Length: 119
Image (cartoon, rainbow, N blue to C red):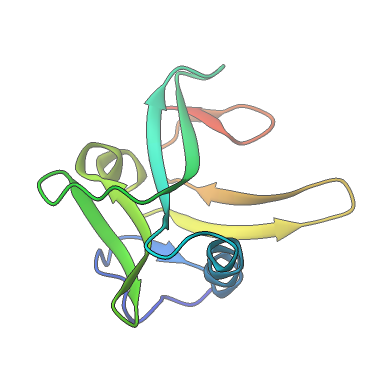
């Protein structure tokens, strides 16, 4: 697992494969779009991770996690960041699925699919 050099928030790691997948996703999107990770209430374990494509950046509430060549790549909001501190974001592919995986040391429990967790 490599830390990304231009990761603005040093308490979060993004693997090389996750970064490459984000770049691949963004290559088919309009200019100015980025990957957003948010934590929402709900899900079978209490909170859920949500990855989406966004183009609206709120300078007061958003946190730029990765920026390349003056373009945003990966963003979260200040509230969600508190729930993913010290996490590792990875991209995994196997015969049955392909998805972003979050290894979150704050999570006390998580669901079987890995998209929801409790603290």
